[in-house]
Image 1: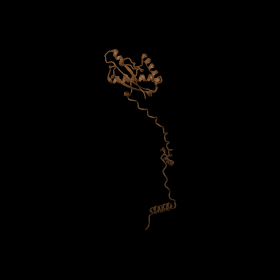
Image 2: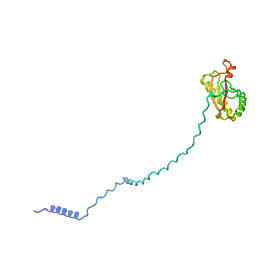
Image 3: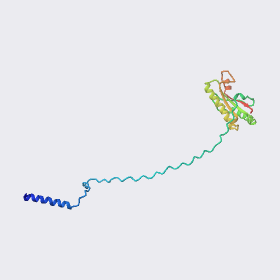
Image 4: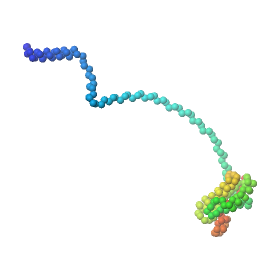
Length: 197
């Protein structure tokens, strides 16, 4: 079969091209460069390996708290029924709705102090009393304040607080039952009783 000249030239070129391709080394594919003006971002760095975690330190053993001996319990106070009045200890009186120690009451308490110091082993009961005016609850509280004010006066002058017990009777035990100021003034008082141990 006879080829035309133009066909012969095409076949020849195809053979030459095939031979040239066979002699060239294979081309490695490379990454295309980024387009001009495109931002190039670096890959984030690999995280650093974590530092080894040390085991928690052992806590030192707890030091036991020192044993402190409890103070001895105070001796129980005698019941009010165990006390009795004596003429050497005189009552002190208060103004209406007050529990402050008046000057005449201070003189009476100073005289009572002489007996209290001479009889240092005697226990004392101070009763707080009120007149009938006011509610029972109010008068019980006021009677207690009167007894406490009397106790504080004596303690400030050297009488041991452990010797003294206080109680309030409010308006329950009046010494005078008439309904007038002279009688009410007698009921507003701190009354002393004593007990020998």
